[in-house]
Length: 159
Image 1 (cartoon, rainbow, N blue to C red):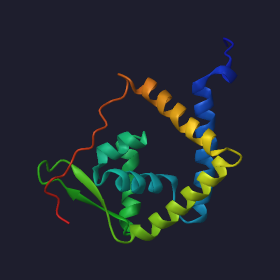
Image 2: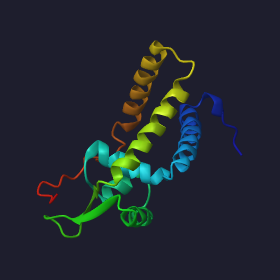
Image 3: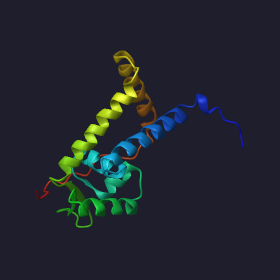
Image 4: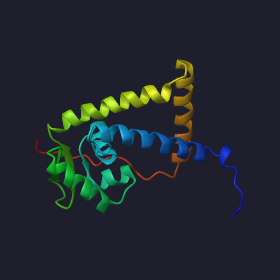
């Protein structure tokens, strides 16, 4: 294989950090009876409101058929429901149900634990610098490369 200096690669730094972070989040979530994918679904809905299954899959970087199983299990648990769009019957929007609130509280607690663990030994100034630098990297790689991630809005959703 062609030699590559991984230690000087921003991509490798991000990848290895993401892997370690995701692994630990998954372990902590599992202790709470929550999967990483369930946390992603609820987190995206919390940030952006109800999303179509296609939008969720795109943001989660998984294929739509892979999301179906996650949503089936979440529906069976009473955490979410899929509602047909009033404007396009082919589209299903995923909405949280009241039972998701308890699970979301557990996910938030895991997030707090991870934030404390990840920030251990970093000063407030270093955290501000890290946030600023990661925002720059994100902007650099998103420039003209990222697909349109604007959520489809359901203006006439029944609650």
